[in-house]
Amino acid sequence: MVEKRVIEDLIVLGKSVPSEIHNGRATVCTAGYSYELGLVRLYPTNVYSPLKRWNIVRVPVEKDPQDSRFESWKIQGSKREWTRLHEKIEVVDQLHRSERQKLIASMVDGCVLDLNYERRSLGIVQPVIEKCYFKEEPNFDSTAQQELFGGFKPTTKKQYPEYPRIRYRCTECKTKTHHDQQVLEWGFYEWMRKNPDNIEQVWENVRMHSDDREKYFFVGNQRNQRTSFMIISVLTFKK
Ligand SMILES: [Zn+2]
Image: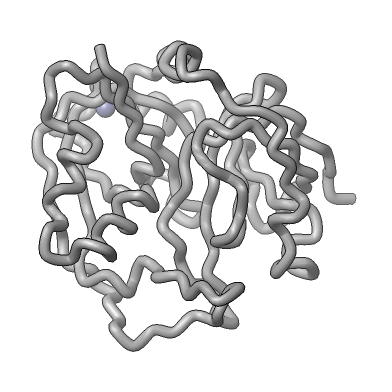
């Protein structure tokens, strides 16, 4: 039997740029925190959902037999009821602005490698930025089409010619050199889609180079590449 439960208090912390899975569905990975369960990954979620950052939602979930990561869940009936999956998510509250940084700071790990050693698939680190840059998308496909979703056609990751990456060290970094990870946060890609001539602005949008900001990365690994971590969400707060 697949384990089922209802998460009553999922605080949404980040959403990835949509990617395409078979039969043309655009899927989003949503990640957050529950006081009951700790860090949680919800996958797949559809592009149209009330899963906005800092919303606290109630959502019925089940384990995915294909994904053994402790933090991973999918919404109950996600395949059968794909087009109305968002109706199962109930927004119950929003985390107050004054509580946000406190929550994130309470979960910081010294280094991404600590997560790896402990077989965890999600975590939060505080980066010391070395370089922010763009790299050519190896799977770029300008012809890729997604099915219309309520009149909205999402742009998936491989429809962007470039994608953002960050080279950084953590506060107690255990790598000899640095981490160099791709940024998956959907907000970065939305800016790039709307402002193709000014994609560099994505770094300034989150004040990446401002000294008056505390910066946190919410990182997660890939199901089929457990040692490979990516930045799901960039969280910055005024000091
Ligand atoms: Zn590190």
